[in-house]
Image 1 (cartoon, rainbow, N blue to C red):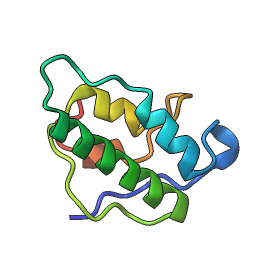
Image 2 (image 1 turned 135 degrees about the horizontal axis):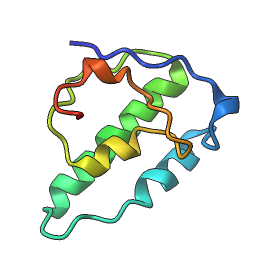
Image 3 (image 1 turned 135 degrees about the vertical axis):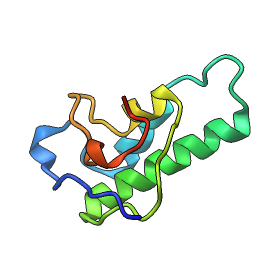
Amino acid sequence: MSIPIHAPSLSSTSISNLQTARLWIDSFPRPIGFNPYAWNTTKRIALEIWKCYFSNKAFDRTVNFMHPSFYNMIRTPEGHPLLVEKSIRGIH
């Protein structure tokens, strides 16, 4: 199942490239008790979503029941979601 990406509007976000997106993702601390491998995987998936955002392609994986921090990673610092949220199970 593909999850649609919101059309990129780089003027509406302070993140305009993958390097800045990686810094944004890395700004989220690993939750206490969260396995380091699982956290790195969570961050890798978030970066894949940012890559899709910048290339304006749907995300071709499922995103279900991730840690709440993950959903913030895939929003711009201004609060705009990268993915069409109604297509994601467990986001609310």
